Length: 243
Image (tube, rainbow, N blue to C red; front, side):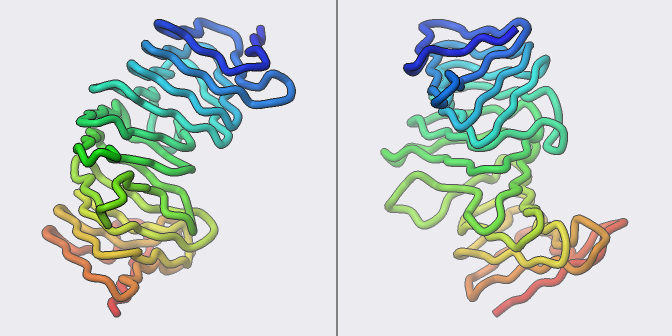
């Protein structure tokens, strides 16, 4: 049931389809990378380990399982779709990279990320991500990297951004967001790393029932074009520390 790649990276010219069984990127000693020029469709179990999986087309594991470990999925197509078949709490991934010039990426579901979202073209062209929401679980390391060295921020207004790190505080990178949720999992603080704008609402609360979640502006400017809410039904109210 288990197919292991060779001792070198695996390149697929065309589509990669796993209809059943298990595929692992580990050859027994080393985690190997996988490059696919077409679509990836996973109906079995894909063990990604710490490998980088580069995909030229669409990604779909709605009928399968990905064991994400610390892997990175790189979408290189002009308009790829990314379908997990679940929600941010049931179908999570680690790192996702979308940095092709003038790229539009459609996330078919809300996505939960334990690693880092890298967005933006190094050439300065816009990368657009369309989704209902992304949950960022990363803690002390910025969960978003904007891949344009001459910019200090980025614009990801096409979806709701949930920053809810576990067991510790976290950071919110500078940038323009759509709907923004600062919801640490307990009595922890999320600290802004630069000027932040929410074009929709900003909601701050503790995503457990354990205590008080805090958003600290860190001395930077916070602009909210919609409503500012300190709490939501069923959860403890949050705290805004402006300094």
